[in-house]
Length: 321
Ligand code: SAM
Ligand code: SF4
Image (cartoon, rainbow, N blue to C red):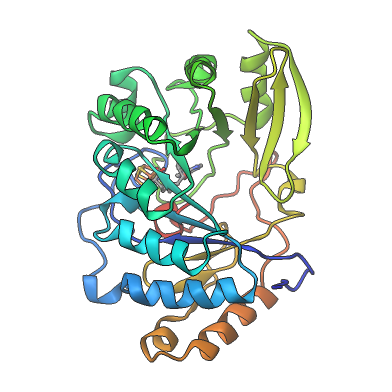
């Protein structure tokens, strides 16, 4: 079992397989030019897997593949199969913008993927275009339907933004309710790469919008999940991810690996250590040593807060959110 320096059990690894993306979301990488990390700087999927395998043997039992847009990485279904075949019981999930899901969902399911989180910020084509800076809605919705058709367990992520999509919080919830899938509202996390003009809604503001239409009951955080669960009177459950709250980090169980091989202990901070040399030399014990060193120094909590206007300099497209 892996523990960090604050005695929290760490059993969840998020792996970014690419920082490339086919969207340019206002809250993530609105101005990112197409000058990507050179391919030779990336770890191969086999090298990433070498580390994941070692981490699973040390106690990681939940792996989420993310990005950038993970569906852009060639060979992703084989990568999913490598992880699944090493341990079919691993909770194997992927976060995607959904744009390429229509043509990939079946292969991912067949490879052993269990769960998908799909980002859906608007049901209005022009608002979706404004956020992603591309005409995306039709393909994203088709991707969601296909993921459901092939039997993947789907959750929807929405980031409510002031004056842009905050009028659609209940609409997105109703869309999810109609399909029996959970929506998770995510507070916008201020970061240096985002559009300066973007303002997110705090968790309490998101809940106010829901309360305009529904009576809600507070449930609680599920285990180590950063998502706080709420229940509607008809039994529908939804989640709120509210990193501006101070209790958010108390049960943090996760560590992040970037496509370049950096292990990142906390989404907010710049600190990172590389496992690249170790895995490229096939030195698995050394990579595990780096993992343990990163965990020893994992920060106690992030610095986003309701009161202070704190901005992280860490790019979401590198860490995978
Ligand atoms: N491209 C995929 C996607 O959009 O789902 C995966 C990577 S994306 C970085 C992972 C998640 O982070 C998405 O749900 C996205 O909405 C969220 N995200 C990105 N930037 C964010 C920010 N500044 N604040 C809150 N959530 C953010
Ligand atoms: Fe791409 Fe996801 Fe970032 Fe949007 S949030 S730009 S889809 S990585």
